[in-house]
Image (tube, rainbow, N blue to C red; front, top):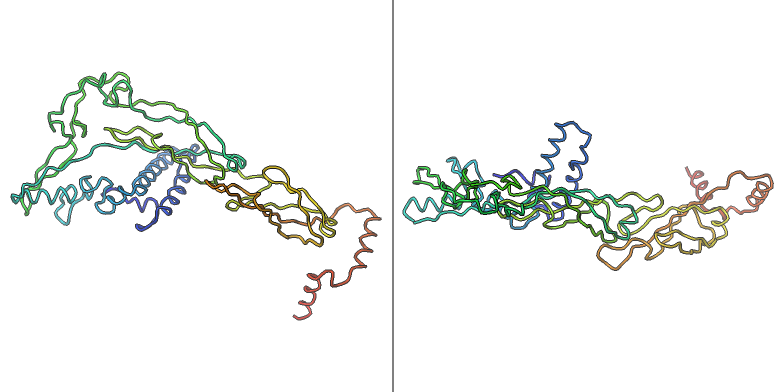
Length: 379
């Protein structure tokens, strides 16, 4: 059986697509090779293997067909994919259920059929982190990233043979890419289909290697990919560019390029979904008498009237001055929390004026203080 993909991602078998995606995102960030650039070689290798397992698990569980095959047959390739490898029951039969039962019927004269094995191998995904400033995430931007990836060799068209023609049919499997093995069992003779070790499932033998790729069928290329980041993205979100990953083998499809976004913090604003949070100091007189102030936004400042007798911690809401909702023509709000700043460095005259002001205030003009002392008397 293939690896325990649910266990690798740390999710239950009935996990939703969103739960699987969230688990993958967190693990991909945790084990990304860039995180281990200064680690020891053994730690790097361990992280690399873990990262590959995580990507493989996600590629299966995020694909509806592959996940169904995996759940039902233990292999993403379905009943013919060689899952359950250790056996069926106590008999140790190789191959999937389809192979077993079709060949049982064949042993008892039912005719049976020869199983077909798809030997295409899809290319691996490439995962990269893209760092954005707060403004780039808020308003969207275009970036260019450079990646190294395997691409199908243009000279041999992925065959690994010179000019793409120096090939011959594999004599061991007669070009099918698979061979049959026969096993005697209490049920009769069981035939199992396996990948041909001679041609490795391609059905062809290279007579003369391609000098460009040296028979591998692919070359390592450095490519620049333009990334369009939409307005409103958030830290940890992923963008997938299909068919921009590693080349597949034996006609398999290309992998994907997965971009994990990392958004830098803003020195003033904090984010809560599509809303912005701002703490803004105001003076003692502005709080007491009220004042018109300029409140910063991600665009231009907006004028706002602070009402008189405003207390520290009061929050004001400015509609539509937050971040753009992702893929929507709608904006969040800006929430401004004011803090009243006590003046420092008062001169003698200022102190006298404040003292007179304090003496002139009635007790009910400081309701919080009155409530505090009333509570103490009731203890």
